[in-house]
Length: 281
Image 1 (tube, one colour):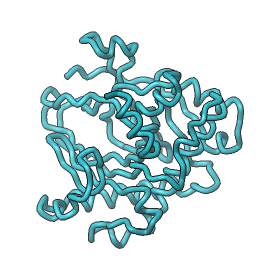
Image 2: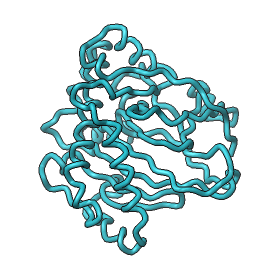
Image 3: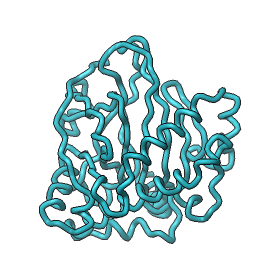
Image 4: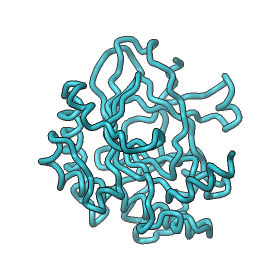
């Protein structure tokens, strides 16, 4: 797998977006038009001043959970959901994940594994702050574009939004990393990570579909910041004005090691997802 280079990333400040700062909103809009991602600095947001401590604590929760035997984690696999849903524990060739549904969190029906039960308040707070931040972004994009994006994420409507803990360790030889390039299906993805691994395709979208792709590593965001990128639903709801970047997880050098991603996925209401599937059929 081609490894690519590092790049500079625009930083957008959540507190300034909350205050409806015009310059900051313009930065947000430009970043999501191209390249489709940016760092979101959450540190000065009045309601999330402990984001650094929270994220460190959630990393520890993820480490304790994924260190368990596979048999224990398989108890958290959800048989009561369609294959397209990611709730609970899942694993594949390259990673393991545990996703907590935003709907279930709000309804008080979220089932946490035994290893996480003592951290329920922490996870609820971190989950809620990620969700609130994502809605601030969507609200400002709605106003800037004059489109009803926020209305497609009704708090009283079911969706597949959720906080996902992901374990995707690096492997002994970088050349052996399994190709996993994809675009996310939702509206916005918010990622906290402290080890290199995320790559994005900076080529024009039509080139990204060819063999002539320009890949670059997105360095881990500073403490208290998240990497945010658009998904396919954002591109569709914006009429193609905003970008869903092709991306993948790789590694810049040889060496096996633990690696975690704390990911929040904002997804539109389920009824809109169903309508899109029908339209595409």
